[in-house]
Image 1: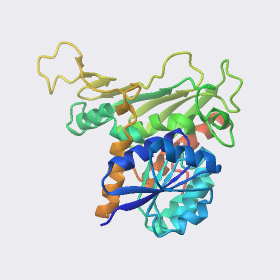
Image 2 (image 1 turned 135 degrees about the horizontal axis):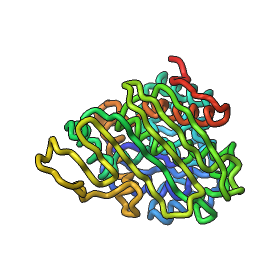
Image 3 (image 1 turned 180 degrees about the vertical axis):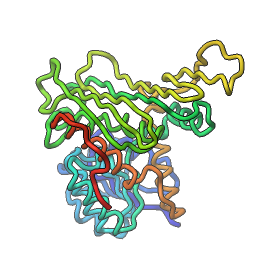
Image 4 (image 1 turned 90 degrees about the vertical axis):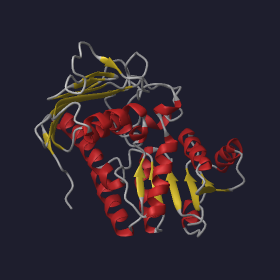
Length: 340
């Protein structure tokens, strides 16, 4: 297969990470950068040292035979409509999360991608984080046994310093604490434990009045295999970014980068510290876009489906929307919400 032509839709900070990874992949070439403002697309092109087309017309790039793959890097509320258009045009997709802010759009893009048969990866980029990969390997090896209780959280004080602050804090463009950032922790729970059958959630507001939605959300989860879980997300914490992961099983436990597994390590008398990169580490391995994009390109070239495709991400987003509904209505919510 010749090089895949890539279009970047959106010129914000995350687009720079996508572009850098595509530049490092020998099978891709960035051919178009699209933004609502031509000057931002031109600035992104210059910063990346590219000699490619820039445009403000998303529709025109979708008709181009030079474009095989589109990276959706726009604000949250634009993702669904752009995915619908790109899928209809037969383009493969890398989609920043959240992919949709409501159930109707979520179902629509799922059905559109199914009908188009294009390859997709949703940017739950922590699947390529070293700690996440270590935890998954330990689970697959039986080091923890059957998970009984799991806990994750996304605690990230987001203020005016954040490039997307102006839209992230609004309900119609950002969504909610779970959709904006908590979905990373929710995706982790699904990857580590399995499918979720019911959620019960609460949300609150502390001192941050600049968010249109409650910036703190907490949920209890029931998994289909009987395990239970706890999930929290907050954008108003007064502390550095924290992403805890606790997995408690029938044969051992993982508390962040500390492992207890006497079956694998006979005579163990204390926690084993794992030399790894945690998801809240500032290292580039915290957000490993290169691994994600290399994976998508391999899926396209080898005609394989990704385990981090839109079909899988729909279930994470369903759970996030169920958590928001539970907190809003004051009752447990069963999953799934969508029907096939």
